[in-house]
Image (cartoon, rainbow, N blue to C red; front, side, top):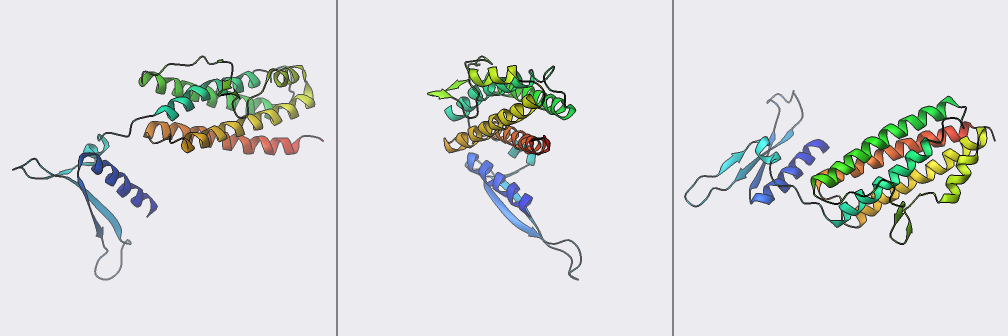
Length: 227
């Protein structure tokens, strides 16, 4: 039922963009009461020009309707998250030669793959909209200081100098904090009125989901480390 409601809501939004109407009906089961439960159905009808008939839009027609445009909050999110992810790649690059745990190496590899993919998606998003691309290492700085969860130079030096069990614990502590900062930045996007454009919303949700999954994995690994 939830999926059906989402379809109808999407159709209503799309129809509003062109002044069309959504006609919602209900498909019912046979007279004996057997068969599937009632399922909402809908038609999107676009009024015709004066003297012309209205027409029912196909799902493909609805999909082609204009989506809400991106805004400054979307651009700021993408521009800041690229260097934020780049620092995570700096952390994963320190694992080789410092950690002896297979689980840490595998975690670092997963983070590296997912964050590189997301950086490429965000760069493509900006390029497609003719927005400037930030340097992947643009000082890792947001407005007035470090972005949420970012490590400063003293943190990076501590991690680079650690080895073995000390490195593993510090790496997980820092990376959990770093991921939590990315989740905070997703929340800031929506609080600032961003994420209305479907592509921006989808990217932000993907970042949020990836970070949350990896936070849980790291917390589990942290709990298994010797005290």
